Length: 296
Length: 269
Image 1 (cartoon, helix red, strand yellow):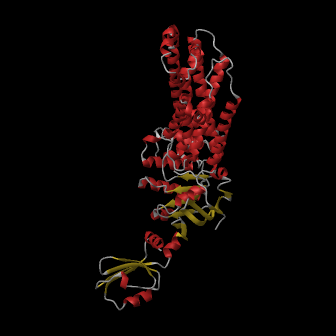
Image 2: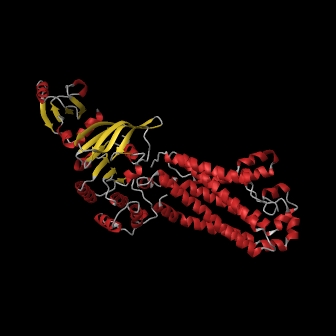
Image 3: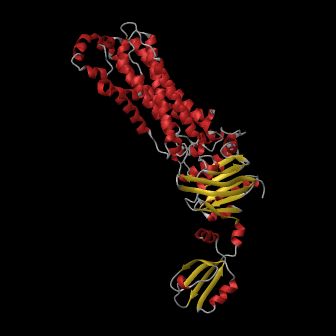
């Protein structure tokens, strides 16, 4: 891996006694599109807010481009773009006023041109008051403000909420194109599908801890198989145990479906003593793999 | 300080500043317009006021009828409440919201992700707060001075007027610092406007109550209003060094504490 653009070491955050994140370690290389996935409350936003110096860690450290996120926050932020999950903005401003205000914080040549170019891409009406915009349009404003200064690193916290599928595809296309120009993207989401579409590597966070960091493709190619068995007679998970089978779900009384990580031959020989009417062994979807990791 | 943030904050708060300026100026002008009528009918008014219990007159800040009949005495008793109480409410409302508003309006995520240090954010907002409080005091003092000039029936001490105005400014700045400090103590983003206004009124209430009730006179020292001397018609009227030290000292202390707290504050959205 290239030099990490984000380097998180043993990072923890507790809110009093409540857990935010615990001993998080993560390295993200320059030029990566990295997915950060987990359900609400898992610690995604906590991690991001520490990176953006909105909250302070209770332990560990984090560096962006080799700089400490607390001590060198100003330098870091001049090269980082951020899309918050909540698309609130200064409601008294119009879109152009807000974007001009944002761009003045950076040394950007042809700022007006950049505003026009990006807002044109997302069909934003620059003269409208932010207060009058729909959630989706506010999200577009949020996307545009994050890209105005052509950052080296883009941090996205649930960026697609409120965007229609067409705009999502424009947005993803833009992200891919910016990535090809060298931008690193840290994409946090609870929707695996969109992470899968965009990211090459992913970290799964659960209850404040990273439980898996993997290439999307490797994650797919894990030995996990989705097994579906229809028996002639009734069967229950409590009296049906196969070594290597996890996440057992019973359908109706005579159906079993589970994720299997053992040897297929062993599974087939174990099943041979049963009267089976249907057997399917297939590749699980990424969502199912994710859920599997999550239930462990 | 960041110029971009400073100018944006200045614009954001301009309308409310203008409204407060107009309101206080109107209060002062209307009250001072009554002064000539008051002087014309002074014998009747003195007769009427002699029926009022001394404690109630004390409550209004009147200790001597003759002082009250001079234009500066009338101004000090009647108008200073607008400038001191309303000005302090303005200062505390502005200061308690200037940092906190970014949190409960959920705009802090935009502000804190710009290339700015917490110190730059704090100093830029503090500069806007100080400038606005100063401008409000400047305009209202100017309105007071014009009213005094328009309605006076004899000379008045400009020095005493300036000391009175300085006391008002110091009091307003102190409440500004109190509001700023309180806002940095708030853990979860929510407005504290009502609480802040209530605090000014409680302090004013404690002060006035301590003036009319001998038994609780000492409680008055808890209120910043206690350290404002409005006895402008007294020939020995001057700014008390210890009172000056009190206002500047507490304001600076609270500002430094706010700065330190804000620099280490977890900002939740």
